[in-house]
Image (cartoon, rainbow, N blue to C red; front, side, top):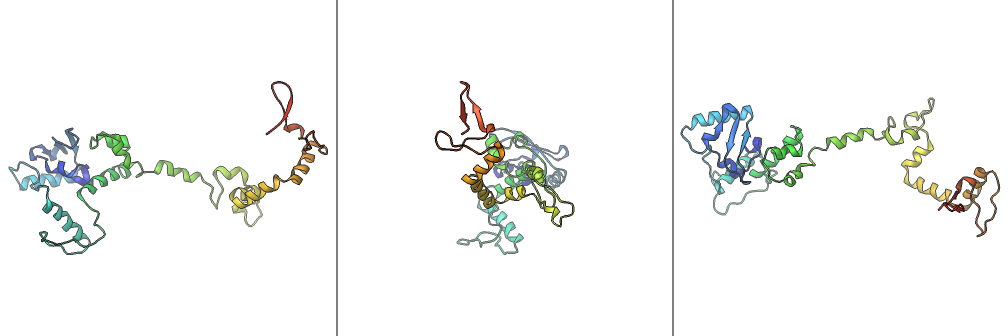
Length: 252
């Protein structure tokens, strides 16, 4: 029940046999930590097992006879040690310490987290849907499971450029040469410049040098740059803007 309904251990121990309705695939939870009674939905396989359990123990007030305590926790410890192939005494002896094993983290509350994770991952439930089960009173408590299913955002990785076929942001920068042996990777220098940070830094240093600006001014304006009033080169025509007052000023 903890694994397939997401209830707390204390809530499961308080379930009454009269409130268990296997034929209706439901359990009425009268009391909860949130102080909010609610109806639980049962899976068919779980309902069949609970029906057999009720038939084997007629006249029982509570659905389970267990009481919260050290022995109840020891039963879970025995089960986890058995899965790992380790021995465990039937009852916890005085001074006995459990060994270190890979399922040491498993507690009863882990089943509640597992249920929420499965509901998100396999059931496709949204955070609002988990809160709608009323297993949590505050939506902020449900937000801890927001990282479980990143499929909506991770689907965007299909738009990233790949080595076999360039797609996405860099696709306009790549030209494929039909007869080139490396056409699969593209031959555009702009593409490799964009992928290589050192090459990009080197290109920036080149274009900001005085000789490069000198020759680029000649190519763009069609004339040799003339010294300005402050001893600097005049800008080409397209780099001169007019302010609202009508005077021309340099672009910063």
